[in-house]
Image (cartoon, rainbow, N blue to C red; front, side, top):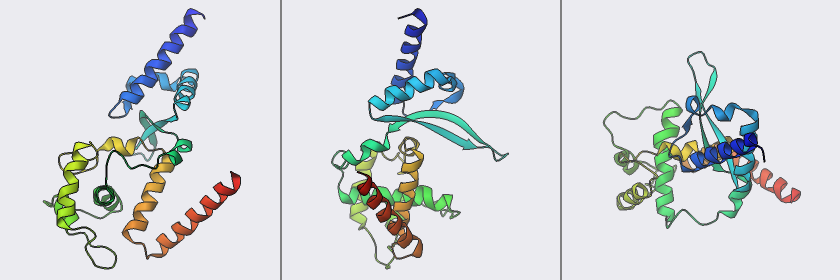
Length: 210
């Protein structure tokens, strides 16, 4: 092994370690290694052996141009089917509360819906109504679930989603999460019905290919 190849290997290992240990995306301005094709290729190869993949975090500038602002690692889509057990000991109620936090914290504001000024996330969750007009979760369910989600680092002290949760999703995973949230929020809509049909078709195609 030459001195140059040894240096490259060490640099790749350092990059992978930093990606895996990061609580937030590594700033692109500080990690120019990912812009070097050879180093990036080796980082992606090493991550793949771990069942991981490299994500680029992008920002839309005022000019409308997309710019890469950071890098972070995520589970590769090919290994996700092996994960059947919910994170830690989260209950279905915990997961339902987390889904509603995602709906109110991200999807509604991003779609143009404005949160009422001064309203806490907990109060918004308490007032959430299901598509049939009934309350999805009891006040006690929500009050019990939020501290568990905070302890696990899934939401912050204001009961908002931690940014790193979404930043570690691949574009395909982020898209599926949004679609699942739409089906949860309005299951009887035409959009939800179309999404369910498409997901069933995709699952059938995957099964046939296997």
